Amino acid sequence: MTFVPVVDSEHHPLMPTRPSRARRWIKEGKATPFWSKGVFCVRLNVEPSGRETQEVAVGIDPGSKREGFTVKSEAHTFINIQSQAVDWVRDAVEVRRNMRRVRRYRNTPCRPPRWNRTIGQLPPSTRARWQAKLRIVRGLTKCYPITHIVVEDIKARTKGKRKWDVSFSPLEVGKSWFYSELGKLAPVDKKQGWETHELRLGAGLKKTGGKLDEVFSAHCVDSWVLANSWVGGHTNPDNEELLCMAPLRFHRRQLHVLQPAQGGIRKLYGGTRSLGFKRGSLVKHPKYGLVYVGGTAKQRISLHRIADGQRLATNVKPSDCRFRAYNSWRTWKGAAFPPAP
Image (tube, rainbow, N blue to C red; front, side, top):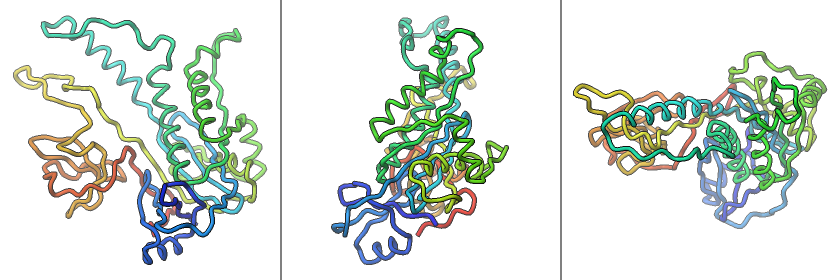
């Protein structure tokens, strides 16, 4: 069973509750429903009967394409999340660099070259990958009373034979930054890959070979055993329901399309605003229901389906859409995920 996160009137997280109780609170006016990154939550309008919380751990299984997150207490597994990693930044930075170099040879205004601002900092692709993980954990700490974080400490494969090789790996530098930021949220416990393997074997669980499969045994099986290693309480998973997430891609500073149209005119492209709406925002349309906002053209906006990003319409009037919430993720139900209460 998937439990419903509960926060008080000041958005301080409390222990989650059962869906039936959350429905009763909403019906009686004691709570207000809302969504947080695809997770159905309730906010209490009255003083809670108690503020005691249990030990709640979040297990993190990092990956190159997919990643697993599990929030668990000793008694219950609250949620399992499988998210898609941000893997497009490296190519986008390369395209931006090439287009900037091309502009310097055209008879068009351009800024003078700047010094390399990435020296001594995290590479853009590395920072984007680890920031996406951090945003998910921060979102979970706002809904659940997280007391501990358990993460699998992945290692970089270096080709050199010197000890300092690992310090030049973007993976090692990125995870060090990630661990320091996690420490600001809750105490962090790191497990080696072989330790996760032993925990999985001890629970009698198997990990599927399909890393892109949207099933519990792909990545969340590892995040579950990591969280269970801290709070305990189970020998087998009590909740294998899966919530899948994918970050939306925004073209923030790409002012024109890469290739000119007929007549050498480059159309405007990019930005994060669409006729008053922030791109990615969840809106309610009388025909298409709950969708998110895409691009804009000719004083009209496009609407996209949340589950798969499919564009539903391109000529929608902004006045026909009712704003619901800001959003930067696509979410859909994984294997055997129940409907919202």
